[in-house]
Image (cartoon, rainbow, N blue to C red; front, side):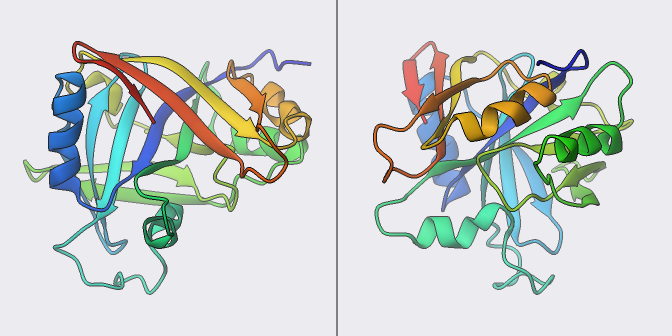
Length: 221
């Protein structure tokens, strides 16, 4: 049964090896240039953002201005190093975030996910500096599973989908899974309106698919 309380997609995360080159690639493909977001201090990553209107796309890459490996001593988030090092993997969707709505808290949404059998990970405080030198702060979870969402709460920080360049649309988004019925309960418990489809074979890995439409046509991620 779908929850009466709904979470909504906040953003999709697309891992790339070179942020500057990927910004140029995205602009050429869609006609819209993502804006530099900034660096995630200590995590070894940087990002650029583009708005879909109600949610947004984050291009995330290793930050050449930070030490390698990151100062945190931990791997870069979203399994970024493993993804980019994998043969034939290349740039790929590595996760998506949902945010609580209707006055619900990130802790309440995390509890709802746990009740449905999905551990979204512990809640952590995060921040980054914008190119203008402003510090943005938010809270999020770090799950082990990348196919199901992590949870983010922007608090008093303006949500990026309201501040970043737009002009592209998220035409479709789907979770692709070899056993889709295993995750339908979690999707329903979070109140998410997301397509869940089966992989073409049991050997195919779970993943995410999206189509972005801009003036330059469709871009399939």
